[in-house]
Image 1 (tube, helix red, strand yellow):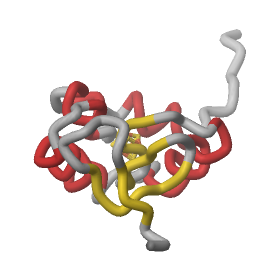
Image 2: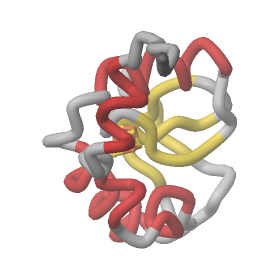
Image 3: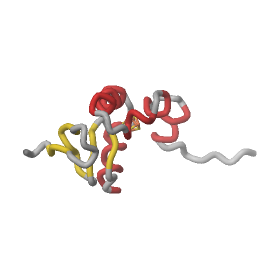
Length: 93
Ligand code: SF4
């Protein structure tokens, strides 16, 4: 008899090929180009793991990249990214 293990929602989504960041060019998610990051954000919108992805990235304080449809910089959501990879404008400003 084969042992059965519960399949988590992330695992199921990955196996079903539902994650845009695994289908598209992952470089877009970590690019220094604002247009690339906006493209990545748009790819994230239909992702079934968007909320889970963003919560995890915030918890890990991801230093950069698009996570859960948001641009993160130094562990916080930023409104947009300028051409300077270190410069970001926070949503709260
Ligand atoms: S929300 Fe997260 S898992 Fe989904 S496409 Fe965006 S980066 Fe990938």
